[in-house]
Image (cartoon, rainbow, N blue to C red):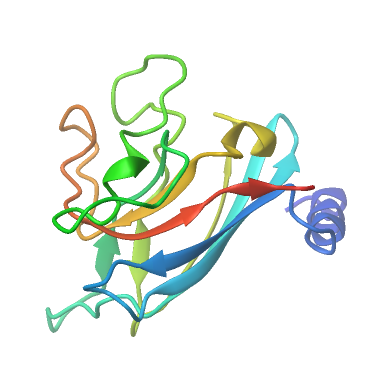
Length: 164
């Protein structure tokens, strides 16, 4: 990789993120917690997600994948049957089909209950995500079911906040 690019990313990561979310599990997944950070990079966003307490994959060969999305709702509230119902649908400001929504993110891969994901997206800038929610789902996104990838139950959520 380009040395200038590497140095730019190191400098960026020493700064406070432009936006972030503290993720907490639903009542039935109380051990899930994590942090999602959003940094401005080029003409988009560098996203860093660190999550612990994810349900461990039960298959003997391989990890478990979890859907990971930005939703348009501004709060992680809900009701007894659906704790994060108020997160609403995937954030989709351009009216695109799934998986081209701005809020469609790469799935999280669980390893012994932990997930680390670092990726770049040009679908939004960090400040555009502020006031929305980030959601972890119980199953992997299938990348074709409409409108949201059939990724199952919302098992964790965090409200995206920005610099004050």
